[in-house]
View 1: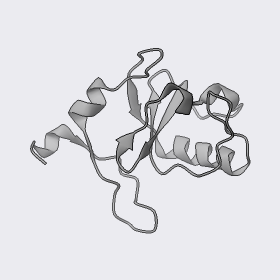
View 2 (view 1 turned 90 degrees about the vertical axis):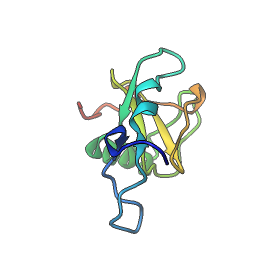
View 3 (view 1 turned 90 degrees about the horizontal axis):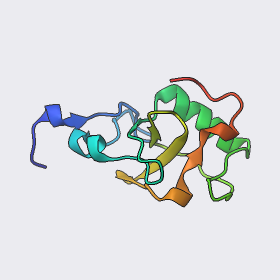
View 4 (view 1 turned 60 degrees about the horizontal axis):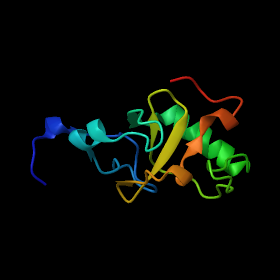
Length: 113
């Protein structure tokens, strides 16, 4: 891929089952992505936030903003900078569909960034 390494953002999360980091996301892409509803910019979900999210998913306490129960763990995600909505990343592609977002307000013990 063209571009220098300074234009890449490495999440630092390991790929499942390996010690390798998940693919990097182009910083330019991250800079233009935003919540499709509120237009709030997004940032990568932090490690402790990801752990809290997956714990809520495992406990059956997570659902999408459309109300669908969320059943499978998330390896990587973006969160709005105001910390209100999470969008998963699947195979390196951010899933920025409004109905696929996960609201953090449903979690009483959501960690502060």
